[in-house]
Image (tube, rainbow, N blue to C red; front, side, top):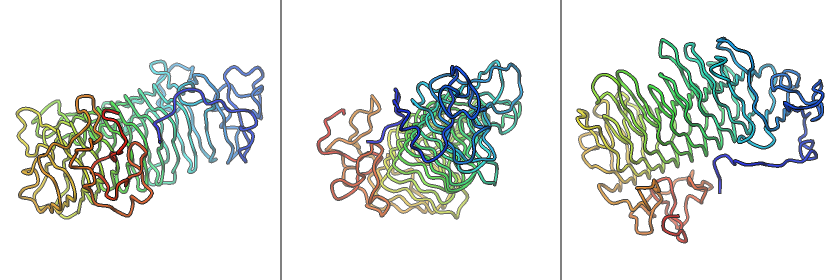
Length: 443
């Protein structure tokens, strides 16, 4: 079963470190004689930037336990660690729990990591305490340049407690800013990051990016509290919970703001879209605000709150096609006194071509009066969750959502959010969790 970031020590022997097919460089802030070429622990660099600057393309820079930070005081709005000119792998020995890149705010105002070249992998770090005050800046880790090369991989990391704030309220992606195409964020925890504009946890600017097996929790932004994703981004097998979209005026996407792209096998719960001034109906899509040719596949969208569309808000003008398949949208609410329609689902305009296929929807009236096809959907039922009070939204054996979905080609080798096979009993279940016949109640 796939897990989100393995905390605890992963002991790696020197022989394993040497057998990588590339030159290894080492970083240890207590090495006895730090000097180039940094090819052993005894001469390991004391800071990451020194080893990265010395390394060649294709090298692996190994970092052992410690807190790596910028010791200079000041407000320079630059980057503590910059990787450019050469694609390499930056990897911790013992994982994110004990290998920390600290932006050192309030002593320094800077982002933690900046990657300017394609093909870089960052694996197994906590990236925290970055703070930026310039327009559109990311405080945690930024990969690529706008409309330029810059795909990269972030895996097994914790990105937490980074902030981007400026007088123009224009911070983008306080935790992660993925500007290039075809990047991957895998098995990470992204929590407690904040800005006042776009994507508190993650901001995806370009096309073809993927985020999988991640937990996006407790982030704050003006739009897209958890994630702001443009173009053909794929979000799959992730949990988005307790994120907040909050600003003056229109607010979209407490959990996710998506323009095109796909959300697949995700649990989206306890997210909030709110406004600190103006009509509360301007706060839209507590769970998801989506537009363009988006897809929501086998997701569970529950217990989110907004002024319109507590679960899902579709904001685009007439024309593009959205599709929602095998998805449970339930137990979402509106703020008291909300003027906008839709307990769970609301539209910014009429006459959308949005299809709902084999879904369980909490309110039939939400889709009435729109050019929406409702194929084999269930309405206003008890979905049979294990325990909604503790946030266990797996299905009981008695749930009408078990074996009630429609099988699709992408499910052949796919797994659900728990890492179990997506189809177990002939037909796929609705929602993010596949029911296991041997699962004990409450497990």
